[in-house]
Image (cartoon, rainbow, N blue to C red):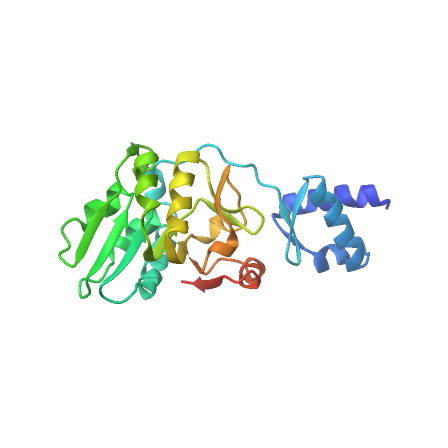
Length: 255
């Protein structure tokens, strides 16, 4: 088999299977692992596949269309509940400040906030603010600006101006996608700008994202992997993805 034929076959195999390791491909095509790595490098450069630690995955189309909050609320709900519960362990002690980003998983976390410690909570999420408005131990600060009906998140210059003046102890951030190459990303530029400012104003960044978002990329990047201290995800995250993130300095929690 010529190299070009093998590379086409490798691309078809990875796309069909969703993922393939270097070792697996070397066995299938009866070549060395070094040859497979060169093939994958060529295919990655051509934009046919994406190289990951130990193998390759298909190139996923960048998403420009978002699902509404109502649609996402029931998607992977058990995973989101587990992630939200694990995030509580990263709350600072009483008297500290936290920032809670918009998102269905972060909203679940807000619903689980303990009431035995006082804290200042800043959010751009209408659902999060609604959940916390009546909690006596929480000093709630709602960012102002335009509300995106699709995600019920506040965006715009007014929110950015306030965020640029803040310094919070911990930020709990949601994301539509996370990859080593593109960092944290989301389809909408206005939401990306607010998320970027949130990450920048936090001393410690905890990302809440189920495993379906790991290895994916969306239209606008708002933070690099190096900006993330902790990723809390679910048990289905692959060992390869987990190892890559840990190798980049991120603490990965499987909840």
